[in-house]
Length: 291
Image (cartoon, rainbow, N blue to C red; front, side):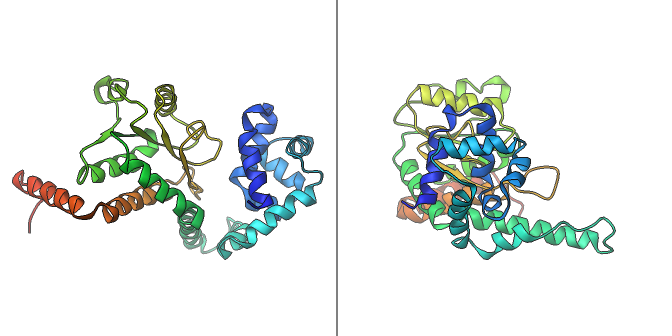
């Protein structure tokens, strides 16, 4: 394990022990590693909304003596990332007087979404997705929860998964049944939880309840230290960077689609039979309009 990976793991493992101010700094560093590589300590502290002394105390807490030493590790990490990361980090925002402001904004949105997707399919993330598929395949029941803006990704996964597996449970809480839908969850099951800051209370409560029942959790979230990622069996950390006022869930949706594709690819003839049977049932209900 490289030193920069050690630092990341140290920040995650010690997160709960840190003061609230140091937690703010640690989370910013975990979520914006490229900023550490390219910006000064004061600039990073300002973006994290903490004083520079907090960053100094944080470095001391994880055994790093100087900012240059800390930054060197993140610069080495940045060299291994797609070039678009460094390019995006150097870009400046367009001025309001730009005659082609709208076009430039749309171009920027496109680049940001592509970067979000690229970060979701790094070799490390691919390994985590394969590990996630193995956990899903071995589970008695697979519970899926994603509230608020995360719901579309949760729903799409649950719907597609049910086309070839009959052990999926979408925890959506219709008619006040949120708690009921988690009844019976246990160590032989699996909870897939999706969420990003600001975190929905129901999602966090579902994860906490699953943990209390010794049910392993797969967290699809925006940070290694998000409340749904704590003690997760697998953490699929995706970026939600957006040029809009609202965060992006493009990477989360794409990752859930990728998990479905992986599961089908690994499912063999049995998965194909179940999909064919599902299509036949939909046809009997005349579900889709035929031209």
